[in-house]
Length: 77
Image 1 (cartoon, rainbow, N blue to C red):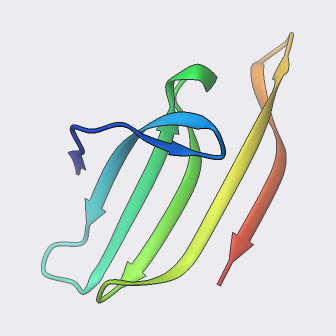
Image 2 (tube, rainbow, N blue to C red):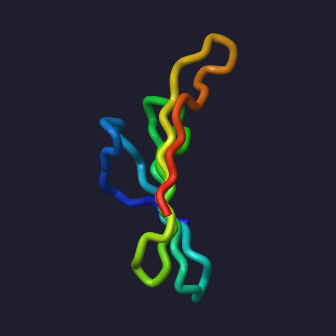
């Protein structure tokens, strides 16, 4: 896993971006985590040979008991 040095934004949330590869596989995963939501994942992208095969976004809302809970979840295939 590698961390990109630059910040990116997803749905208005500043994110740190983590890249996950599967060794010599043609698959790659990218995870966007949001510092403003305690580094929870706000977007996942799975790509095969550079083409996005799945793109999932998660929106959170504050919760007194646990900090953050998912309020929306959208996946595109």
